[in-house]
Image 1 (tube, rainbow, N blue to C red):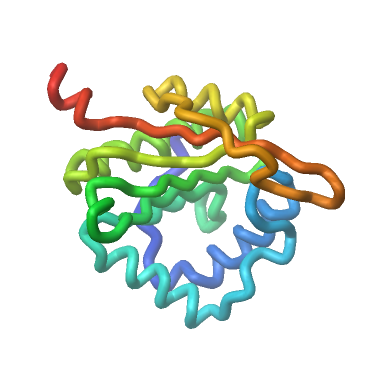
Image 2 (image 1 turned 90 degrees about the vertical axis):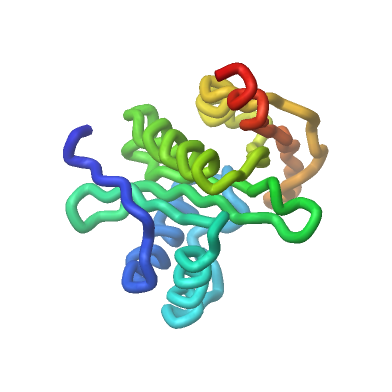
Amino acid sequence: MSDIVIRELQPEDAEKLIAYIKRIGGETDNLTFGPEGFPVTVEQEKAMLRSKTEHPKSVMYGAWRGEELIGDGSLDAMPRRMSHRAELGLTVVKEMWNKGIGSRILEKLIEYAKEAGIEILNLEVRSDNLPAIHLYEKYGFQRIGTSPAFFKIGDAYYDFELMYLDLRAKKESA
């Protein structure tokens, strides 16, 4: 996978990101959206990416194979008394699952969090998405609870695991 480049997404990546989101939404039911993606314009997506690049505790990375976006990961800083925390999101196109792309993006996000002074990372993951849970646990994330009926797709309800990574403990033991 040496041909995969992971870099911070920029406003000029907006069109490719919108197409990517529609693609991954059609490949899995693990996300908050389906093949419709998000109802955003290219200009709105550019503004979102610009705000991430300008915020000292938020970032969005893309995994690229040539000109093709095949994965993304983000940290979204939380406000006010939660400013020591960030929400983590991670996706990879289905054809690249279990090929180390998610690990590489996650490593980059954790490195960024440490450099930015983020102390705790939060995420939610579908309870039956065992490969993703395994990935997060491999990097030290712990399950802290379950949110029942977090998703409703058709008539079916899906629980989500709430997970977190405490980077303070890693600093103290280092």
